[in-house]
Each structure stands twice: as C-alpha cells, then as structure tokens.
Length: 291
Image (cartoon, rainbow, N blue to C red):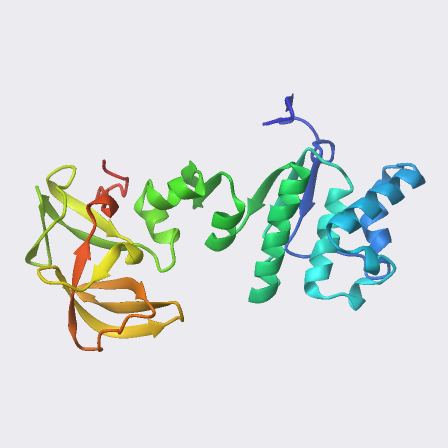
C-alpha cells in the first residue's frame, strides 16, 4: 500500500497519515465544537495559534463558524457529521477514509451532506476513500468506484463505465435503480428463446447458446407493434417517471417510462421495443460479461 509515495504496509495505523470519518460521529459530548475539532491537534502538540487557524479554516469550509462554542447536543445530525468531518480536515492528512458517514442521516439531510462532501473534495483535492452500501452515494461521489461482493472485487472503473458496461451480473443487478432485468435463455443469431417463446433481437448476440440477457428499465420503450409482450401487473407513479412492473413469460420485468405519458392499464399487455446499443450479455455459469 503506497500513500504519497510511501509504502505503509508495515507502518502503524496511527502513523499512516489517514483521517477517518465514521458512521458514528464519535464526538465528545462535554466539549465544544471547537475543542472536538482541535482535540487531535492538541494531543499532537501542534502550536495553539496553528490549531486555531486550522479549526477556523475548516469551520469556514463546513459552515460551522457560528457553532464553534456549542456542545454536540445543541447541533442537528447534519451539523454533528460536519464536525466529525472538520475534525478530520484539520489534521491535513494525505488520505480521507469515510466509512458510511451518512447512514445515520434522514434522506433529505443525506442528500444535502452528500453534496457538501463532493464540494469539500473539490476544494481540498485530497484523495478520499468512501465506503458505502448506497449506490446513489457511490455513483454521485466517486471518480473511480470499486464494487465489492463478499470481499471480492467485481469491477473497478468510473461510475459511467460501471453503469454502462457492468462486468458481472452482480454489478448489473446492484448498480441501477430499479436494477437491470436479467433473462436466461438461448441465443441463436438475432433471436432469443426463453420460457418456450422465441423473440427477435435488434442485434445478434455475441455468441450462440445459453446466455443471460440484461436490459435496463430505462432502455426499454413501451409501445409500437411487433415487440416483446409484457403483461402489466403494477404501476408506480414517481412524478417525472413511472415504473411499470409486469411479467415477461415467467420472468418479472420492470420498465421505466415518462411520467407525463398515459400509463398502460394493469392487466393489459404492452409491446416493448429494445435498443441494439443497450443489450447486455452474460455467461450463465460465471455471470461474467460476454462481448
């Protein structure tokens, strides 16, 4: 492991110059915001004037200046999380490690704090590792992201790469909301057979034989004739969009449509049109992407 050109494998964790922000704010309840942010610097015997300068600068970045004299109990959850981030910032580390720092916040505050972290990274320019189970946080915050499954790396790349070209069925079903639809069947040129029915593909499969076909809900269009028949079961109205849930043979299938368009009626059958540019193929046994 190399940090700023220094191999740190055998270096004590406290000496690796990494600042951590946890899910639990871990603030001292009897200390003010200023003292919480300054505590690590005091232990490191940093000069008092420099401590004040660092804390004031971090407080300005995080919009905490009016709260420096307050105790944690007088702050909101979002403000407490910013104090925890400020405590990391004042250390001026080589690397930030964020371990699910937004998990304790409600949805609105989580979105606001996510934006603040993105701005903070842009301002400081410090390498940051962000651990999360939330794909929205991963997609919006990362410049490069690693998708892990049971301790094994499934894919490493930019958010666009991971979304547009998932390396495995695990990544395909994990990234994207709703997740990618996966159909197991047999490909033969430009036809695909599953559940005893053969349907036409807009482009030939990369190879013949048993394959898994992945289709994102947003890349399937409802309407027209001669498409794939989807029996509609349920429609979710989400404002700007609708999610249409139904059955395609024995497979559950979801498609996303414009919320301004009239929805199909539950129980009806709609014809789905596919795009040749958005067909994803995977090996049935290994789950690996097939080109």
